[in-house]
Image (cartoon, rainbow, N blue to C red; front, side):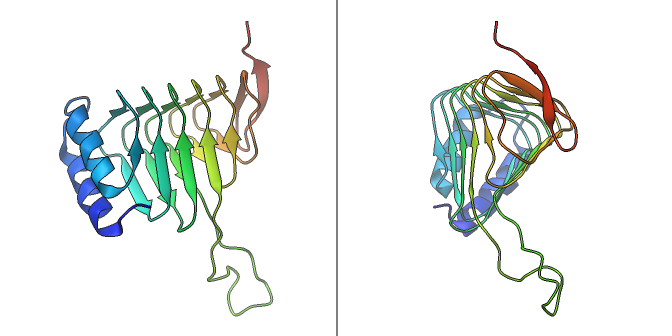
Length: 170
């Protein structure tokens, strides 16, 4: 599990370290805070981890500029080997249920889930991946898409909500 105090310090460091440099230092800092980080992971400037869930970054994955991982307690994000999460994308693991009978429309109690970004896939720039979603291996999520349900392996999806565009299997 991620330490909230340590990840706060790591987030500050990731905001000021150079874009493509200091990869070993960035991965050491993330590991120190409780993130499981594989080998040869690239983390660019401004990546932010919020919350105290679990985050796993597989071997040789790429995390672009200003990616935001929102991790509710008890939740998990798995970015498998060779996967790409494009700049300014957001990965969310929980939400607040709608409660029209209660004192407010959104419940104070949150939910948690597992989000999986499959081996070799690409989540392009400014995408949103919502709770409980699996992005299948070697798939492509087009820029700006909002992924609300699972993406099949070897497919391209896009739009809001993301819909099937085409198969990418050769």
